[in-house]
Length: 315
Image (cartoon, rainbow, N blue to C red; front, side, top):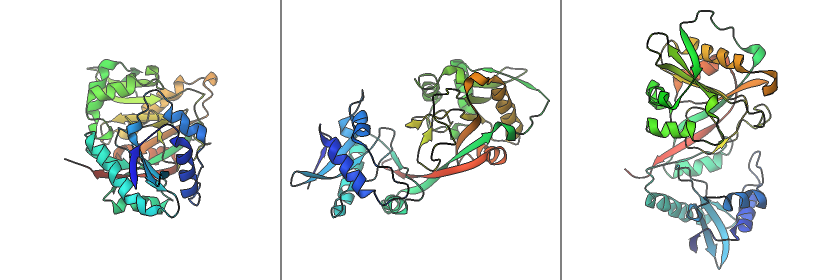
């Protein structure tokens, strides 16, 4: 067996392997050559993030990873599954050489054999990403009492936003959060707003609402697919799916989380017009952000979820 990195023309072999190996999985969606080529021909594509196993010059398996630490399952042709462990080990070594310290996987919850593979390789369930939806007619009536003001966020607000609850974010600094919020081509800076204290004007909470009507309807997508949602706090640095009407917020994890969340949700609703073509809210939250999750469980309707397994790769 020979393990090598991506070479031009591997797309057809990859499609065959994935579609053959995954055909029996629940709600499996076959890959197309166009989808694979779109990734391999994209600007910035890194061939060193795709490893292929060859036997006698024929590609029989492959495994991919992302520089954010996400690693894929080592897909192999039927009869070649013995290659999976070696291929996966080589993929982890490639990630180590890039200095990645923690790796994670995320697949559908109803793909137990896939998730069991990662558990066998010392990955542990770290959290679930839970998706929600809220019809406007079901939104609770917010309090009439106003103790703060809400307005557009600026880059200067980001350090205070980060300090509200650093455990919510998947980046390790305010500078990285600023890049995620203000340097994302799919995320308009106008989407972000803050609730300020009336006395010192510092951010007490931050909210985000995506109004691009060209993005997907949250009720039309499979909410159990392992897709991080653009704009949801806690998905920074991830490859994301763009969902219209997505609402997210962050604040201090205390007893005021419900009224604060409702203030932000109400303010976001008042920004919408008929031209926005938004018919409901969407949301996504990590299960380890327990205070935020309590708000969504109380106000929104739960859709599907997917697990995130993690492993420390090196200290």
